[in-house]
Length: 148
Image 1 (cartoon, rainbow, N blue to C red):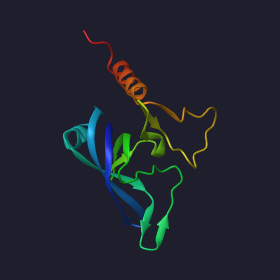
Image 2 (cartoon, rainbow, N blue to C red; image 1 turned 90 degrees about the horizontal axis):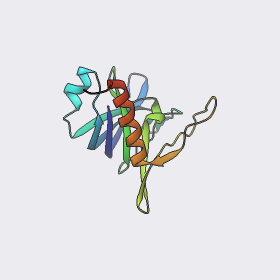
Image 3 (cartoon, one colour; image 1 turned 60 degrees about the vertical axis):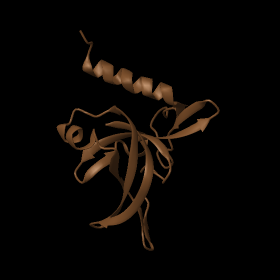
Image 4 (cartoon, rainbow, N blue to C red; image 1 turned 120 degrees about the vertical axis):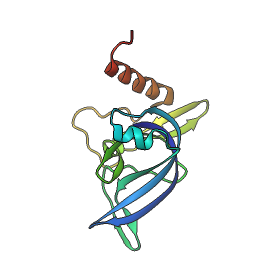
């Protein structure tokens, strides 16, 4: 699933011996809902989604997970999401989250990849939003094959 959304809240809690953060996002656009019937049926029509990330702070205890996305309240984002045991998660951790920043007439999709080390050439840290959307749609079109 690929969505453009805004973070409305984030709450950290214990799940077993780990801290997770439940992030609620308001969906503005859906670029792709996914081949999974589980994702399609439960999330494609939802105006708000709950997404889980690793780490967070509960009381005085904080768990930091390097490579986990930071999804802050009020942030506009493009998120690549996957259904896993326990809920929706950002695909590829921070690699699947793009923060949207308006600069002049252009909206930029920015990846914040602090703590991630790359083997080889790292991906571009930012690109215009329209370029990211075009790349996603092109990848989906090639995956589906040509239409008659």
